[in-house]
Length: 413
Ligand SMILES: *Cc1c(COP(=O)(O)O)cnc(C)c1O
Image (tube, helix red, strand yellow):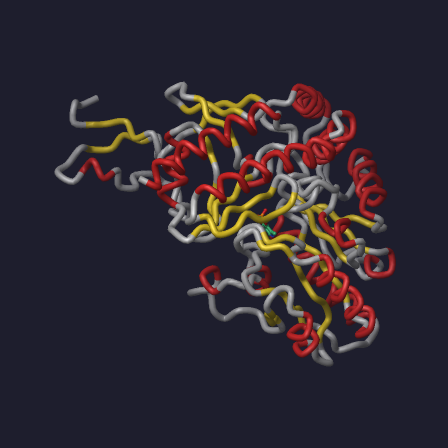
């Protein structure tokens, strides 16, 4: 290898050192859809991850709410290893016992009746939109429209980016599918005014993740539920980020004491193995008969084993209690920090999905945290989002709060 070639850890390719070389231009075959951090993580254990130079970090991103049990949980490793050696994939043309078990478990936990498995969150939401439309079609009704919230995030498929309440994800992708509208979150009058004769469903995140850690107030969700019942339309809750215990209850809708007609899950469900789910009441689910919807990979034996194991560990290790206790510990720590730093405007969120709304750009703070060994995330330009694994320890929370205090003190100088 010529001396003028340098190993580029981002692209795993050799790049030539030219005049303007050290700007680390993109030199790999990946489409440039992510502005990646200059960091390569190669190993994880519990709440810790290590980079390719052997440096350890506290992982308070969890693959964006995916690594429910942290990294390399022994029971998850054993269960999926065994499943891989038994049967990795089986077409949905056949009965899959693990899929049936998982569907029954999710139905019991959610109070909904039937489940369709996808591979991702966006696919689960696409299925939810299709199901809502088909439900009204089957009744001979013209209702097709979907109303969602501004600042929401529902995924990157054409249907779901159209439902997303942020223009940046839509730019350049015209023509977008018709039938989508948006209203501000927590404004029941705006929602009531937006409902038309052709509205089929309201689609909401109980706690917006990507859009800035914005809570849909329980009273608002209760009023939305009531409005949907009065109007005869469906309530779809997108719990792709908030579901599976993230907010301290198995599903965030439990905080409001309501139930959706359709529920979507994904991120934390498989603990790192890709799987999404679309759940519905029996009456609504009846509109998905053979040939109406499908997925080659959705709900295969591997992903269902992973999800069953995640739920089993959550129950055995009482992780909902841990989320409540560690969430409170983290919240109190963040509130104490916000009292010391006047550029922290608000601490918000639920359970282990917390956000620090700041009156300055958070990107440099996130970089400084990373350098100091703590991985946290942004939710928009001015919110720091914190998402540790659900089995995070009290000591890890204390350590993270220590790093935040250290970094915030530097920001002040
Ligand atoms: C991440 C996310 C999605 C999209 O999930 P993908 O698996 O990336 O398709 C949809 N809705 C919400 C609330 C999310 O947080």
